[in-house]
Length: 329
Image 1 (tube, one colour):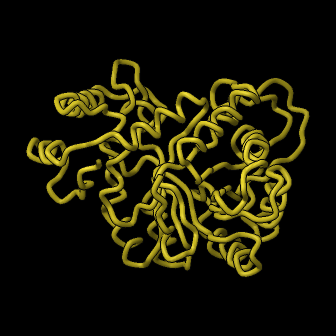
Image 2 (image 1 turned 45 degrees about the vertical axis):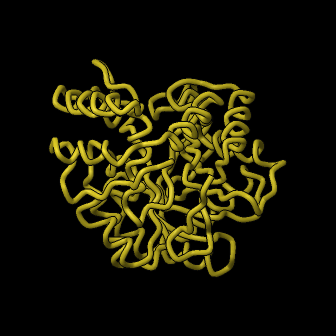
Image 3 (image 1 turned 90 degrees about the horizontal axis):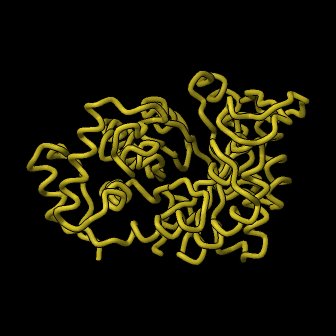
């Protein structure tokens, strides 16, 4: 699988990235064995970029990912995790499904974007992962904490980068406007944009992606299926984790209809679409099983004729100025 340089850093990420929320029991549980098999299948398919976070399953995703990668050569893969939520032991009882994860509620999350909190978060993640360095550290969902992040959390990540504890630093969230501010006002290396650069939603193209390209900031795109609608558009499908409105469902079905005319699965077009923009280094797909890992790799490599992209523009389903990939062989 091809690897791209992440912005101006020496970090090289595989075009397809393994999203670790699923193996943190997002919505439903998977076993340790299933998580291990998912990582193994992704590795066999050529994936060399793995993303996780303390938030995912109250640390379960980090522990499982660390275990699954422990026998792999450390120099051959890139791992990213995130800061902003500290995990504090707490006997809360029940499960963590209120936060989206089918795990026992043994800890509570506490927002902490202080310098001390950022350093503690990285240290705790290293322990859970069983590693001595993080390749990419993202500030995670700083939506309501922008000023503190700019004043405290971001400078601490810069110090950790200078110390070699983390390789590259960035911000991950699903709001393009705030990411644009970070690209403009800081020296971050990368952004992880979720859900805002897909066939259905190109808000990331307004300012963020052009500015990132101009400043040499690498872009990782998540949420290319918009939580399911672009994977399987049908009544009841979700967009951003809520039932899709009829207008969005009809648009997604329209994309599927055009894709089928060219013998292309909608999933393949959705996954390949972001690579039309030169700032995009990798697309992250949430993966919870070996079958999903293999499917994502197959969709990445599925041939897509230029005529498909041209028809989408002719029909007004994509704007004329939206960059689309060249034919993939």
